[in-house]
Amino acid sequence: MIETPICSMLGIKYPVFQGGMAWIADGRLAAAVSNGGGLGIIAAGNAPADYVRSEIRTARSLTDKPFGVNIMLMSPYADEVAAVAAEEKVAVVTTGAGNPSKYMAMWKDAGIKVIPVVASVAMAKLMTRLGASALIAEGGESGGHVGELTTMVLVPLVVDATDLPVIAAGGIADGRGVAAAFMLGAVGVQMGTRFLSAEECSISPVYKEKIIKAGDLCTMVTGKKLGHPVRSLRTNFAREYAKAEFGGMDDESLEALGVGALRKAVKDGDIQNGCFLAGQIAAMVSKVQPAAEIVRDVIEGAEPILRGAMKWVK
Ligand code: TUI
Image (cartoon, rainbow, N blue to C red):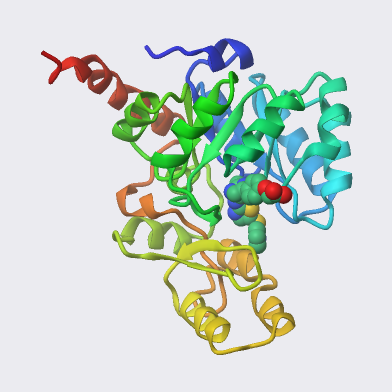
């Protein structure tokens, strides 16, 4: 049994969050993770408010456990989705890909625990000052939108910069990763890529297969030129995008090339035009299994490692 301050703060059994993956993390997946004792999180991504409200209702019909909503701050619908999260009084809001300062008071007034993803010490300090309940420190090993720093560097720096509980994310997919995160001072983990292979994850079978087959060098980062670097599987699409980026394509055409690519991967399994977001740890994901089993597996894997942590201490 592993129990940390984030468990009592949120009323969850295990300190394991499921990352808010755009187009992927719906009410069904979130409910399955929450029913398994972790914290399921619905991703708003670039979707409008109606979609998010409907997924919140779906999750509520499938679980009586707490769950969260992730607000992607670059979304054109961020304002209205932020308002829906407050109206629906979800237990937790996590944020990504930007600075959530302007929504913090509204969420806190609604009694919501706000847990921003931070990719730097400066953002960790700002969010602490503005009343966040905890922080997620996400390193660049993660899938999707990435910051500069690795998990190994970012997590202890953020732990030193705040008194809040810190959740580690990026490059974690098994008990060893969980144990390592605790050694860095985190009191919980967030995993996205590992949950792509959950039975309750509704991505196209092509996507699941590609994750399960992925090896250690199978991801790459594109999008630096436009200022939002994104880690995805090294597909034809990703290679062509990188070529266009370095070949001097103008920003508008680059933007157009990326439009709809996430959806094409998730819904259609479109290998030619889809962008299959994934973290480096995809190499460690090897089978389809229920979300609750994934939560248990990583916790049970961490326990003996943490118990044995004195092995070399004389
Ligand atoms: O947000 C993520 N991962 C994401 S968002 C996403 S959807 C998307 N699609 C196309 C282009 C871009 C995004 C896919 N994956 N992770 C959390 C995260 N947040 N990582 C890094 C950050 C971050 C970055 C900058 C957090 C705060 C921040 O602050 C910027 C500022 O204003 O100082």
